[in-house]
Length: 77
Image (cartoon, rainbow, N blue to C red):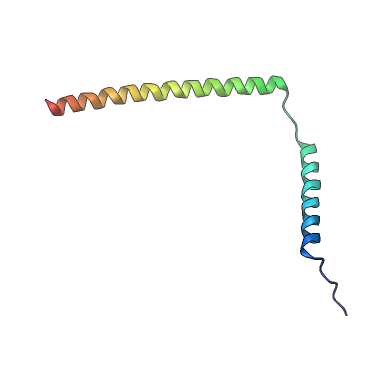
């Protein structure tokens, strides 16, 4: 029995790329995209969280700097 000859590399690569884009398109049809209102709400939540975490980091840095400065002044005498 004769074996079927494999298509050359370019043909196989072209088919793989075409299959990838077909599958990509079908998956993107399943996505539930957020509304503009949801995007705005989520963006504001993220910005608020970033601001709060930034303030906590700033406060920790301030307290740590005061502590280190105090230790240095104690060592210097």
